Length: 619
Ligand code: F6R
Image (tube, rainbow, N blue to C red; front, side, top):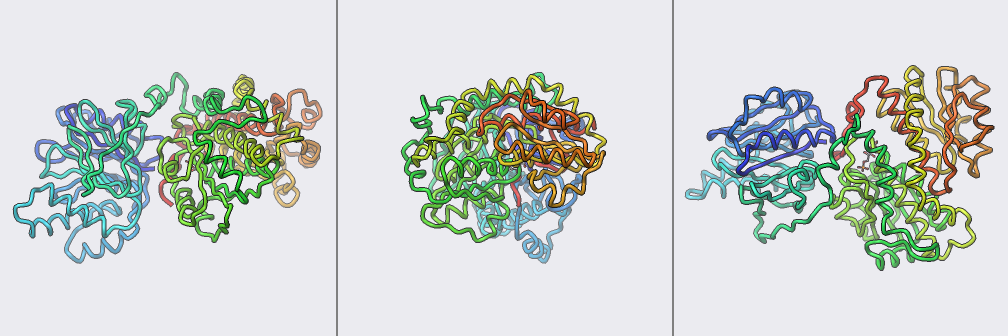
């Protein structure tokens, strides 16, 4: 969702700000803007629509200015137009903001009574006006105090009044050469460059400039100038910087027509990276984790596992339920975070809560994690962004190593999540002494080791999958069905399809077809059936017969050489036979590419589908 960039230093600020905004586009936004500190005043430009519009409108700006802040806005309060775009000016200050101010309406009423006039409908302007109002009040009572002390006191006062999780970054007309801000629950990353200080809401805007970064702690006010970033808290905690192995080339398209296509093709590599150093020498030995002892204690004592996530990540959780129940005989409950956080989940001794999130910043997933932490149960996370809030607040982490995922529709993060979950469930079965005699355990060990190779083989048919996708653009609805571990993959296929194409698509457990969805079936309906040669095969084949009998158009994703499934289908995709644990990981690839091919044929914006945001940091 919204993105923030700020720079103060010796270099021209505008190119850095605009480059940062472009790198944050993937988060999803509908307007953008910047403010430069210019000749004792602010030069502010805002634009509804793409960052490129802002770039085009700024060709004559920012030739000499070395200090500025910038923002991409995903509308929450007020329409996505230029007036509501950030930065917002209030008297002496100009401000950008991520997150939501929950009590903005009360504060606005209070300020309006005091005569403050508002020019936008945003909660952000309310925050800016509140700081400015307090700054003026404090200034009247603080003769002799510096402009900086007065501003910092006003920011502290505003923090006590504002409710919500947010990050703000601002400049003051009275204080040239400095940028100020607050991290209060929405991430801010900073880096001290040789030429100044860079601030952003997201690593992507920083890594092209420097790989040593610091995620600011929550509840802190910072000040940045050309010498770097400092916290202003009384405890005066130093910032600890760390090296990130994300490099600029990892956030480029590398010759692909879109980030999503690059990310689809990266899957063999990132799955290999996710497994590197973790696979055991043999089935009796442990997988290798970063915190081995804690891992063993946790899983030896577990009685119930909750896996919580949103969207695509929740489909990874659903597939993992099959693994944990079968291999580890563990009660595994799945919930979407937006429901879990408002239910009354039962936390008993031995309950473990695992949260899964690509971004590590999803508001609902974070709230669910906090609920579990408050209840005192053990928590872990499976996150893709190192040092994200969820990664930091969870008991410990099983990181995926998918690298930056820029395409809004998740692909490589999902396959990496499934890979980690498969490995984890196998290891938990070992720790609980339950591996022996299970054929699928042995096969899945082998399946994991050869997964990158198998994924490569599936991707070698990418052209066929995309062409098949093109043919779906005129269908009335696309249904995705599967049984067992293929059921969550069917849900994921439908989600990818609707996100990218905006066409109706639904996923079902194949056994549910005759309980309602079969009413959809006619020749303008395509049913994409996941029917690998697994234990549910014969049942899924019966479903194919039922769909065929009603004239539905069938695409089956099955196992290479399966003539029976081929005969029953209009089109057939044969995948290599993998293991019970890894087949779902292979089966999602054609679904990603079918959606891709169809969206391309429809001329959709593949990397940034309409209305979606990459990192859903509001409820
Ligand atoms: C779909 C997609 C979303 C995310 C969901 C959770 O392609 O990307 O459904 O999976 O918003 O996001 P994370 O995993 O970052 O918590």
